[in-house]
Length: 114
Length: 115
Image (tube, rainbow over all chains, first blue to last red):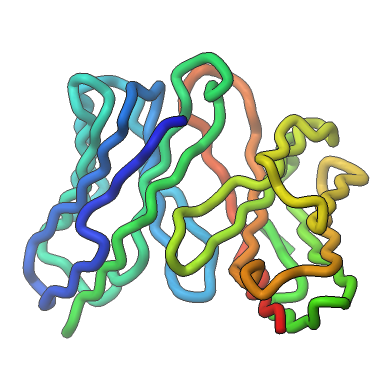
């Protein structure tokens, strides 16, 4: 069974600060996704990374996929209150019985104070 | 309606009740999912339907019974639940295919409380 750990679990910062959230897996995965979930809503996809070493940018969000395809990070520059939410990483299995299944991390709850 | 809709949004039931959760996707996708989201656990996959056929049952207790009458609708029938089953139940859909990561579109969830 693939394990996915996210850190930190909770993050409370002031508007304008930078932050990084980490996602680490116990084994290699074929692709990784980052989702954001706001209260009362389901998760919404932010990005999918499929290539080891890949870096993707989405406005103030920068996503990195580790070279060994076992870890990823999400960096937010100049955080805003609208960034508040639960950030989830999800990996898609690389093969065998885990192929195609999404496994989610426990999430990072981010609160950005005005 | 657009995207993925779920009804009801909130449900309170006793342990002896029988109720059903409904999910509908308006995206033309071929796969649908039920997830359970508890306060202290990661999002847990419960069931997967692909082209109306159940392809995954993630060791879910029989008190949860899924039904997928067509590729747009998914139900989760509940009976004799336990208080620990209280959680947010999320439905999702996707268009499977290819080796690249695919996007799952989630509904807003049903907040279930079992008394």
